[in-house]
Length: 253
Image 1 (cartoon, helix red, strand yellow):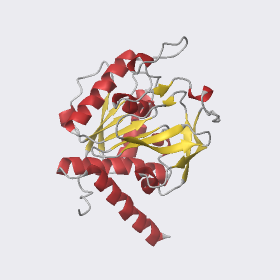
Image 2 (spheres, helix red, strand yellow; image 1 turned 90 degrees about the horizontal axis):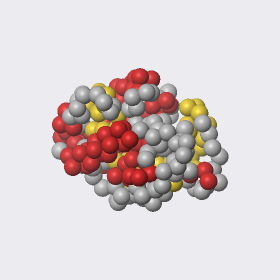
Image 3 (spheres, helix red, strand yellow; image 1 turned 45 degrees about the vertical axis):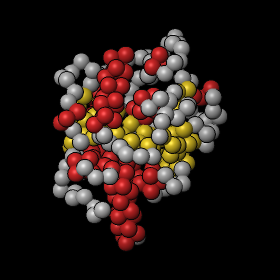
């Protein structure tokens, strides 16, 4: 398959929180524009989501997901957003039905796992010996799984990421594999093994648009979205994007 034309700017629907979307969405929009895509903003309480108007989906970060969605128990002192949970669950189910490519960011990665039948650690730092960070700066080092699409996309065995989460993926959902873990063994990225393209990262790459490895995550989604519009293989398109960019990077070195 020849590389799809970069002249086509696919449209990506982006879900954000009602309370923090005002500051997060502009970073998503910028990251997607750099990747050659356009974006539309979705949040609970706003206009009806139209999956027919987009070529791909991003499920953004925010509050914890209600444990009732995956068989967990409610705990005191945890911020939940049931309206957003319902919205994003419906968006993901509709996206899979329409075979739209998906990128999950932080809680979006967790929601992706839940919709595919997995579950979460509600307090992941009680389970893993992982150092907890609460920063948008790239201070946490994660190990990218060899032979993963994420590895070929970022071209790095280790990436430095930010960290704002307390929950993490426990049991993997259907057709998902681990794409990265931190030094304590906590899952930090997941990816689907068959089309449609679906990748989830536990960090916030939209805050790290100044770093090439994180920009390339958005580029992979954009290329998968072009493939969806052209009705060709999405993961194959993302793989080709990664290989072509790797060749260009090597020629510049």
